[in-house]
Structures are given as structure tokens and as C-alpha cells.
Length: 269
Image 1 (cartoon, one colour):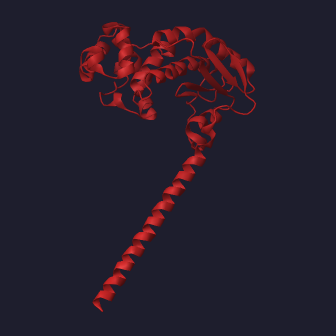
Image 2 (cartoon, one colour):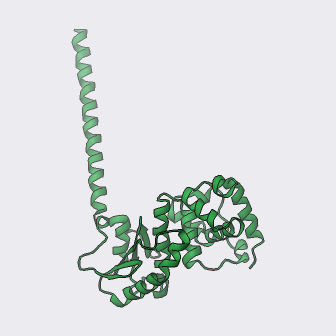
Image 3 (cartoon, one colour):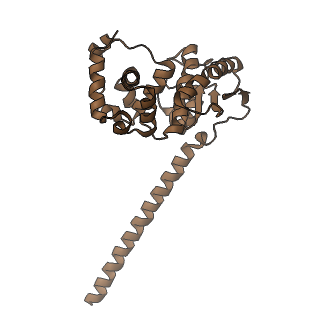
């Protein structure tokens, strides 16, 4: 009798475990389906009917806003050789740029349909590995102007190039480089009394929203500026490729951070 009861209990446990396994498996399958559906827009960067402008260094794909696309194309084609040379990239390697007439379409290419529900008015361009995605300057949205977006293509081109050197590079370094080489605004010493300098821990963030909120777009360019002045451009490029401070600069990351902080305190303007 006891054996029969024990057997029934064991069968009951197995049944519960089986149901839990089925539920868990079903949940994960459902999650995979939802995630896959969300990223459908990101599976193909080229929209139907897109036309292409081909240059020596860049290829620009665009929808209907031809004049704006031509402005982006000419700027990118003119500046690409210098940017690629600075990064040690083969200038025969073409950069593909995709320009979308709608800001939301561009955002969906990175974050899928989720972007439709986010308030990312500031978000007008990005890179997906070695490719650049950009909102058309003809439709800049609420935050930016025509020229802002036109210049932003240079910023994203730097990111695209750097992704060939170090695909997993941290935001602090890649944004600092893009701002320094492309479209960073001047830094003034008075900012130190108006803004909090990113902490050592902050400089390692992988979160783009936190990076923006902590003043990353203001301060990271001065980090690259300091490294170039103190250690030379070759050392900067070595750091970008390896993220090994000791090998590239001869000092620890913390030591370099402290030196940079001192550099800001005695900034020249």
C-alpha cells in the first residue's frame, strides 16, 4: 500500500515537472517569436525602390529625397578619405550609407518595431557594424536641423570604420573618436562648473542613454584630444584596436583617467 502511494506521489511530481517544462518551453518559444517579429524591419536595410549614388569611397542609398541624399553623398565622399586615413582603414573599402525619409523608419532598422513606441526625437543616425543608417536631412524631426543631420553622417562613418578595427569597442572610446574626428563641439573649462565630469566607472558604460545623460558627448572628445597630445596618434589608434591601456600607453586605465581629469582642470579655453 505504501509503495503504491509513493508511486502515485512520484508520478504526480513527474507530472508537475513535465507541465512546468512545457510551460517554460512554451514561454521561451513565444519570446523568441516576439523578438523575431520585432526585428523584422532590421533584417533588411535596403527599402524597396531605393536608388543608389556610387562614389569612390561611399555608396549612398536613398528613397525619395534625392537632393538631400546628394548633399550627404558629396560631403561623405569628400571627407571619407581623410577619415579613413586617420583610422588606418583601406580607402578602397566603400562605406554603405542608407538614408530614410522617415526618422521612425531609420530607428526601426536598429531597434525594430519597438522604436515606434519610444520617444527618440534626438536619434537620427547610427551604424550597424560597417553600415551607416541616417534620417534624411530633408525631414530632420523636432530636435535637429538639416545641417545637423548632414554632418552626422561623418560621425557615423567614423563608427562604421572603427567597427572594422574593434567590433566590441566601448562607447566612451568610439564616441570620443567620432566626435574628435567628425563633428564634436568645442569644450570650454567653464563646463566643469556646470556639469559633472563622468566618473571612472561611467566611462565603461554600454548604455547609450546613460552615456548621453552623463555628458558623454561633451567630455569623451576631450579624452581623445588629451591622449593624442600626450601620447601621440599612433598610440590612440593602438588603444582603439586593443583597449589595452598598459600596452598602448604604458599606464593603467585608472592612471590615464586621473591624468585626463587633471588635463580638464587646466584646460586651455
